[in-house]
Length: 438
Image 1: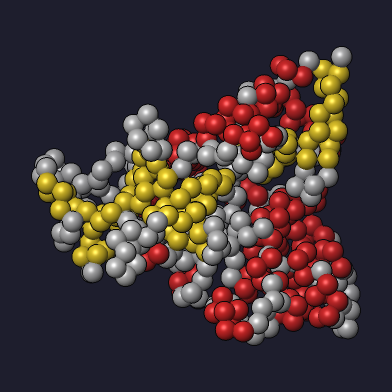
Image 2 (image 1 turned 45 degrees about the vertical axis):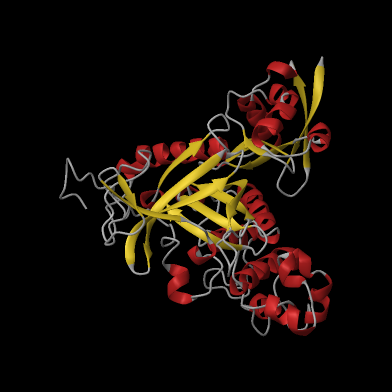
């Protein structure tokens, strides 16, 4: 007997499927059924994956996974990978979603021409921008919002819409924290980093600039696929685009006479390009690292509190040191496994990649500059720039068997798990065996 299965798309629409022998039906078989219903081209097999998603946990399924069985095991997964109260675990129920595959390279995404595939990717990216899962500077929010205006309202025409009419639906175009209006000193302080023209007027100005020219015919409107593609291309400038997201906490830096500042909630975004730790409340990046720039490990609850450790180069009052960031999360094991798999995929794709760039880092076609470059050059206060001063890290160097807090030259790494590509800036020195390695 066939069972009804509901699969949700990024625009919240539903694809109903009638599935025989549901308990043994694999994610791969379900994926194929969705592609057939939506009449998607072959590229959709790689571009999308099935996910089980709830407010407490998000899991991308492997092709061999059986969604029905994982759904039955959901309470066990929540107990293992979240700190949710028992009452929330008992009532939480995941939905089956058709989403972008974390392992789909951006360079391949830029080659897509099918309008429906582009629309699905656009809808998902738009949802992440509006929910502030992708932190964006005001200028970028306005540019992206303008493309949403073009898709939903058509080409810009003078006087239609006005700033007043955009204000009524501002939340459809800009993240919620840019739509809020406040008064007085505290509102002004919380609005630091914004500029005049933010909100409906800035959005209207950006909407006016959306290009419509196709070829040499200036009267011809661009197809929607062109604007979907433009939206995705703009999102590709965000170093965390296409990431999987995890929840955790980090130690706050000590403040004043207080030796410990407590903890702050963070979101950890992991993609094929690296790891980004973001402040969940302030909607900005605290730390962004490419895989060439870090070592990592995790400790399980059996050893001590579940923790993901990130190690990277830094300085302490001008002195080069190793920095260790401790991310408390019951999802540390998931994050560690994803980092390892992303590195393996990157190494498998490496022979097909072009020669190294002048900086020595691998160059990927159609990809934006590394996340530490563009924002620092253009916008010193960009939300995508790292804010290491807002983190409490362990600074150390190691000499022999003695750990010293500050020393001019780093000598070893706590962790053996790291990218071994012979590229990038993070290179561990082994003084006893290869003293000249740098």
